[in-house]
Length: 122
Length: 112
Figure 1 (cartoon, chains in turn blue, yellow):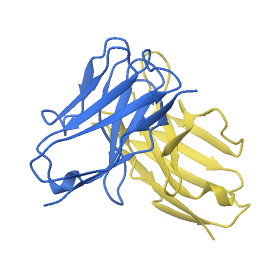
Figure 2 (figure 1 turned 30 degrees about the horizontal axis):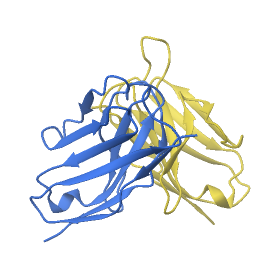
Figure 3 (figure 1 turned 90 degrees about the vertical axis):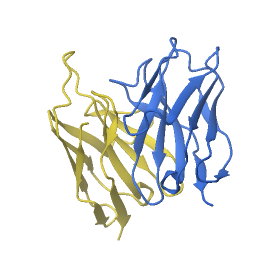
Figure 4 (figure 1 turned 45 degrees about the vertical axis):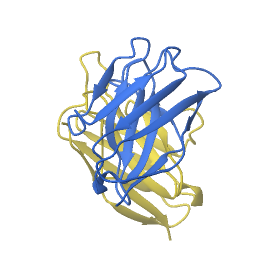
């Protein structure tokens, strides 16, 4: 059974970038999409984008378009999410989560990674 | 974007009593393939979210039978037949019929 293991907490300055990784433990996610979801402190869930399985084609939410890049390695064992031009409002927990199929659309989200806290502060 | 609106936003329930959460979407979640892409997730305190219900009414693997989902089109409901202490957390409805995937605001369930 695949588990998603994320990289550790980060503290960043405004204007800088952060790159969070998500590794599949116990297999790969080659036939599935991997998504990134943000949760600001005390807030709900916001889908940032995802990368399609097999084709490794990214899809981004409009709110993050131009600031986020989602990639995956050749063997689809590790996915990465890079967010640039960080501001204080980007502080939150970033989750990776697998879709139930190769595309984020028309599929459930499970399992979830443990989350990575990103703090943006001067 | 499809807006998902949950009610109530908080719920306090005595153990053994039922609970119900409503979710309304701004557009139909019925796809041309005949399936309806609505989901329910639970985020327990200090944990990542976990999938409870997929495609309106299907319990995900390992989800207790006391959880049930119903609805169609734009109106969906999650019911817990008899609430247990372990059910505390925030419940989110979600849609994936159209990108971006969107979530409801969340409903916080606490035990009386």
